Amino acid sequence: MRIKSIFVVTILLLVISSSAAQQITIYTIGDSTMANKPNPEENPERGWAQMLPNFFSKNVKIINKAVNGRSTKSFIEENRWENVYDSLKKGDYVFIQFGHNDQKVNDPKRYTNPHTAYRYNLKKFVEETLKKGAYPVLFSSIARRNFNEEGTLVDSHGAYPMEARLVADEMNIPFIDLQYLSEKLEESYGVEESKKLHLHYLPGELPYYKDGKNDDTHLSVIGATEIAKLVVNQIKLLNLKIKNEIKF
Image 1 (tube, helix red, strand yellow):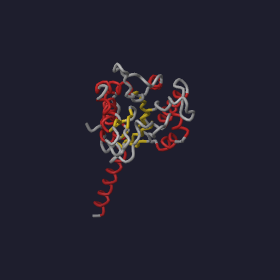
Image 2 (cartoon, rainbow, N blue to C red):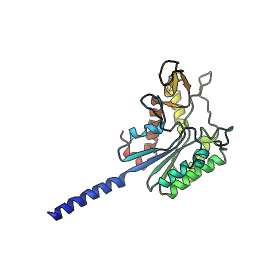
Image 3 (cartoon, rainbow, N blue to C red):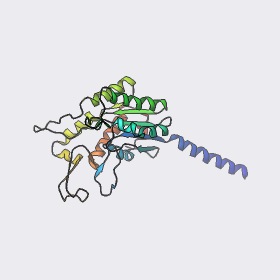
Image 4 (cartoon, rainbow, N blue to C red):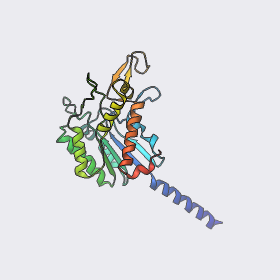
């Protein structure tokens, strides 16, 4: 009887150990377009990384460390990257998307030159992730809804997306061109319908924005979900190991 009990306990421990070993953690670092938003029952804004858990099996844990208003520089100087780095384990993933706030040339706490400091900071994230035996994935920033009078979507990111691509190529790591993919998404919706991807509300239309809202950078539930879908599809196309944990 005792031998049987020991056998059962051993089997249970092996099952628990196996389940724990199979869990994959994805850390997401970046700005407000990725970050979790408070009061989801009332607040219509979402970050696209906030929607990722909907697409993965229970074996994947998403830890969203993206924060509103952060650039590569401020994310490092506030020790936010250090906290992620200290938690990283072999086999984890780090999704990296910065650029919107690195452009803030009038804010020395956030601005980075795309060809120097921005590139250096991205390489730091990548090198230190690899050092831990984890997998970095670089992203270009999502496009802003920035149509001109002729209905052409106009770029607003300058050299930052190209530098992200070059760092990924140089370091031979996966790159997901969210700028291009989100541009195509905006264009597919069109000038007016693309407002649904963002935060457009008339005064009094929504209690959360009682004075109205006209925001072409940040995402609605629809927009964040669409971007998350693009990311998941790219994970499949890039044949990343975590593709097997995608639910659909």
